[in-house]
Image (tube, rainbow, N blue to C red; front, top):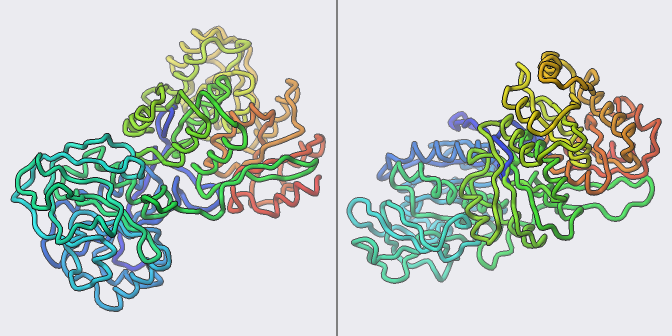
Amino acid sequence: MPATLRRLTLGCPLVIVLGAALLLGVEGGSAATSQDPIDVLVFTKTEGFRHPSIAEGIQAITDLGAAGGWQVDQTEDAGAFTSENLAGYDVVVWLSTTGDVLNDPQQAAFEAYIRGGGGFAGIHAATDTEYDWPWYGELVGAYFDRHPPGTAQATVEVEDRTHASTLHLGDSWVRTDEWYDFQQNPRDAVHVLATLDEDTYEGGMMGEDHPIAWCQVYDGGRSWYTAGGHTPASFQEPDFRAHLAGGIRYAAGVAGACGDDPGPSPDPTPTGPEPADPGEVQRIAGPDRVATALAISEAGWDSSEYVVLASGGSFADALAAAPLAGGLDAPLLLTVGESLDPRVVAELERLDATDVVVMGGPAAISEAVSDGLGRLGLSVERVAGRDRIETAEAVASTLGDARGGIAVVAAADRFPDALAVGPVAAAEGHPIFLAGPDGLTSTTLATMRDGAVDDVLIVGGSSAVPDAVEGQLSAAGITTVTRIAGLSRYETGVAVLDFAVERGLPADELLVATGANFPDALAAGAFGARTGRLIMLVDGDQPVSDQPAAGFLAGADVSDFVLLGGLGVLPESLAEELREGP
């Protein structure tokens, strides 16, 4: 990347609600650490007025990147506009740019980028830019004309509440900003998302039809614009941040449609398994973790009254939710960012769902998401604690008495063990509790007592779940404790399989997931319980014959494998090896 680009720090969040977000992850099907594997370039060059809010805008997009799993770069250097460099980005955000910021070769490179399917997101003064470049004027949709003095509170009327950038809003949105008039009304050329009610503030000159946010498909690419963002405070508003997140995701091609535009058709298309012949290897995969969870839902459920919604940015809440989803016989869907993903809305409609359980607090799944679910007429219940450990406790309390008095304990900071035991816990109704490096908390032990737990399965070695946990359980009167563990995550996964088979659970059909990262298999617990499949963890970079799974397969009669995730994590060579058998 050019030396003038600044790489911005990232992180993550969730929905239905199981707990707090863990700031790590590797996207299934690719090597990107993201919920949506998008790369964002924020361009902030100014040759005219420079808005003091640009710094806050950069920070807001950085935060959105942390929440949504984006890679965000920021630059003031127009030299970044080369075909080679732009090819690395899904969307370029023009954040309050002003004046003539690109020379002719740079303009040509950006035009070629858009014609090649790139995305443009314009914020506020992006319309006060490049007045002598007609192509840009058509891309952004309109040019700035004037604004009344100062800032004012006004009412924004939302015309399209199905777009990713407005889905979280009501019919009206009251906020304070500097309100632009434009040289021409863009309605005939763009799809208007929201307008200003000029009766609610002084000085508007566009009349009854005053577009203020819009989108369009233009010259082969996608364009989104919002006139908001003059004030630094704008970028602290949760609704405005969600508005930005949805607009950037739309422009990047990962979030729904613009008016009559059908929206992105990602490659590969999310795929679910066809009916299997003996020995067949199938694959459920989507272009991102949200799409993979949707494909799992479609493969497992024709309809469902309940849906559990968790953050795609954290393993802890989604995996702790497995027994809850199993008890409700409900699919587990994922969401990322601060707005409700239109793809999730479509799946809720397909399932004819009436109730959504949201996993985790607002830091994991925003209030904008839960409010959006409510506006769809769904009953929404949030299951949450102050952190992932307390969220797991909340799930256990929701389940009531542990079935058979059995509970599972896994590490709070490592996903593989909880992932491996998820289908077992979901099928058997065993709550999953999480242990930290110092063991179990007093509230976890109290929750176990309240749930009549008298038998605990510890999954993972002492480096994952410390030996002190056994002493804590004994002191709490729980004397039946079994540790299921191996020397690695893959050996522990095989130990879970052996344990499940001893318990009488079938192993003739298996789910297969990478043990290297969690995104693709977050929804596996409930799906495995519903379809009678346990989960086998593998290293996609090694032949199966060189892994602990080979020993299990040699003694089992497995007729069907369902791979969870794309070729980037579970390559075709691995699938072919499974087809050929041990």
